[in-house]
Length: 454
Image 1 (tube, one colour):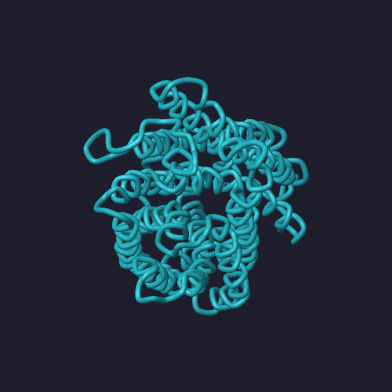
Image 2 (cartoon, helix red, strand yellow; image 1 turned 120 degrees about the vertical axis):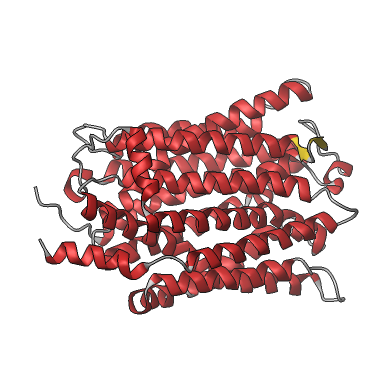
């Protein structure tokens, strides 16, 4: 049966799912380390220490080891889930059944991660956090891997692809901004519940909202109308090998790993940059991120238009290098007698432009690579390409957690936090240099040649 082109309503409903999982991912990415490795100011204010603190092995902390290990486990689970999704033979399609079943457990585990490690001593909590965080990332993969595999299937033309990437980028940043609201909302409960419990209640409220959002595309999109639902019969191991043999994907994957190292270090460090380097209260995290998001959204329309005229490669490379400026400026925050708010908004404004570009275009670039591979090989393995991209994200985030939690302890005062921003700058620069090797012309040419031959 010939597939229909997805109308705007379907694309918007799909993007609401991104809003949901972005909230949950943002909560864990932005606040897990902050919650379990509190700053000296937080401890002085009575924040409890749930897990083992300080360096425990080869310059690494317990929270760094736990988060890195969990992300690596998630990275190896993703290809398995992608293979199961690609080969699923279900009347509802290959992706929607996973999304329906995974949304609620995913939301529940986001709460459990911040709740269970409190019942015993530090060793119990170390192990409990490890187990709960593994379960969180497994449920994340069960929802997000099939979800992402729908991107090239719903975006069946270049215009639809860029539009869909724009929609999900908007909801991703809104979701991340909502995640930054955790301390603001928690402040409403802190007087009666205490700091840690207020955070837990807030995260539970946000998780309910996230679950509802994630169920919207699962129950409103008929996958059979718009996507290829013919199961793939390629075994998982063979599918993984074929995916990583794709030359353009290799370039994309390496640059993406470097990007996620840089971005995760920056995001993890933001609460510390705001409070320790800039000297602002922690509720300013949301204000600055919201400002950055609003400014970024103003660039979405120009990015959408320019990507169709100039191509995606130029804009993505530009964004990598511009992000380096924002990260580099962060290393100097709080110096030269400049007011704290000036530093905060300077970083927010500088990061807004690359945030817009890298929020939209990498997903569209990967969709191009997946489609070019499909028309060249005759195999529809979109799920595996997006699982591989998730692997690059998890690998980058794992390395970032180890680096951040280790580097941030260097020196005295705020030296470690400045070094984390500098490290993010270096990784972002390397990511941009690698991405310059992506051959966009060959990728788009393969797609266009196949369409002309139809």
